Length: 192
Ligand SMILES: Cc1cc2nc3c(=O)[nH]c(=O)nc-3n(C[C@H](O)[C@H](O)[C@H](O)COP(=O)(O)O)c2cc1C
Image 1 (tube, rainbow, N blue to C red):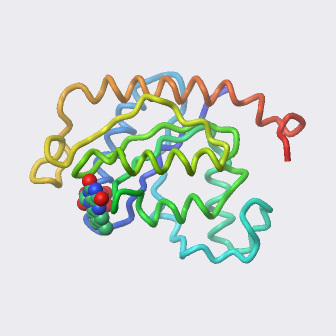
Image 2 (cartoon, protein in one colour):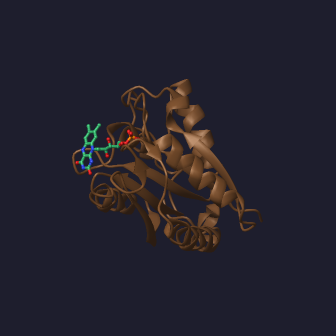
C-alpha cells in the first residue's frame, strides 16, 4: 500500500509567503521514500464561502467545486497543513476549505508547519481542536517558522538550519499514523 500525503497550502493571499514554505516542505518530503507527497493549493479549487445547503457530514455535495475538492482530499491518507497565523487563528480560507468536507478527513493523520510573526503556534493550537471534531489524528512534532528569522525581509523564505530535522520528525509521525489508521478507514470498521 502506498501512503499518500497532501501538503495543503493554507494561504490564498496575493503575495503569500506560504507558497515558498509549502514548496520547501514538498521538496524535502519528496526526498523520502516512505510516501507519495503532493502539494495541494486550496487557491486552485476556487472555493467560495461555504455554499452547500446540506451539512458536510451528510456527504450530499451539490456543487462542482465541492465534488472536486472532496475527490482530491479523499485520495489522501494524511495531511500536512502549511498554516499561517491570522489574528491568533488559521486563515479564513483554510478554515472554509476544511469546513466544506467531513468524511474525506475522517480517520486520517495530520501534521503542521506553521509560520507567522510569532511562529504560528496559536493558529495550530486552534487547528488541533478542529482536527478533533473531524476525527483527524494530529501528531505532536511540528515545524514552527518565524517571519523574523526564517524569512528575508519578512517575505522570502530562507529557513534557519534545524527546521529540516523537525520536518523529518513530523513527516515520520504523519506517515506512521496515516498507515496505522488505514484499517480504521475500511467501510466495515468505521462508525457512522
Ligand atoms: C489578517 C492577518 C492577520 C495576522 N495576524 C497575525 C497574528 O495574529 N499573529 C502573527 O504572528 N502573525 C499574524 N499575521 C502575520 C502573518 O502571519 C504573515 O503576514 C504571514 O506572511 C501570512 O502568511 P501568508 O503570507 O502566507 O498569507 C497576520 C497577517 C494577516 C494578513
